[in-house]
View 1 (cartoon, one colour):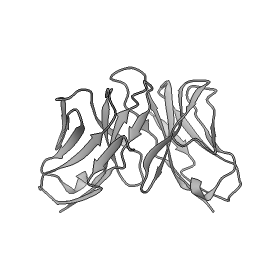
View 2 (cartoon, one colour; view 1 turned 180 degrees about the horizontal axis):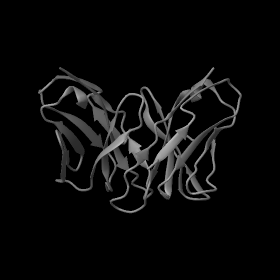
View 3 (tube, helix red, strand yellow; view 1 turned 90 degrees about the horizontal axis):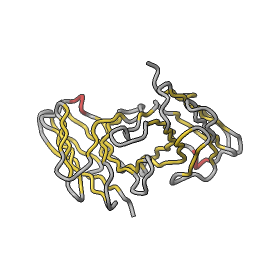
View 4 (spheres, rainbow over the protein chains, first blue to last red; view 1 turned 45 degrees about the horizontal axis):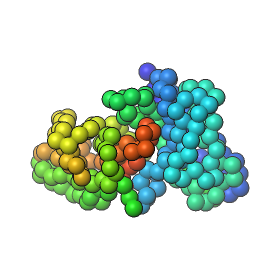
Length: 114
Length: 111
């Protein structure tokens, strides 16, 4: 049972470069989420998706782009990386409906923008 | 204004010393409140969901309770392996499935 996997685990990039973080889940969960976690801020939602081809902004979407052409994949792209996007990024998934709302998280991607 | 506030930010306990973590929330019409555990370098791991005031859930040394304004995570006779950051979250009152998280309480249990 692979669950939800994120890649890469660690990434170092330079300001202005485009970076894509990958997220793949094997449960066919309809909902997927991207959060970033920073000291002093906790987990903040970047984007989420209710189903393939349906995405919506979260609390901190600026500078990020998402797509969801297939239910199992939800890549996050930083179009032109900035130092303020240095963070740990977590992907999560869930099923809809009462009793199913709990999120299952990946192991995270630690991104450093130099 | 934060919708979810956790206290304390950090807590140090001796093994066997019971205590409680607090999560207060300001959303009206709570749809669900969630507790997660996060170990260093890992993603959060689900612990409990609470839906209505008066509800309680238990798992080993952990017990979560819910009132109309806050939730408590009670830790009874903790062990060093209970050391982690505990996160509280509420379901979006607007109807979506997204969760709004508090900043967490870092618990350290010394042997």
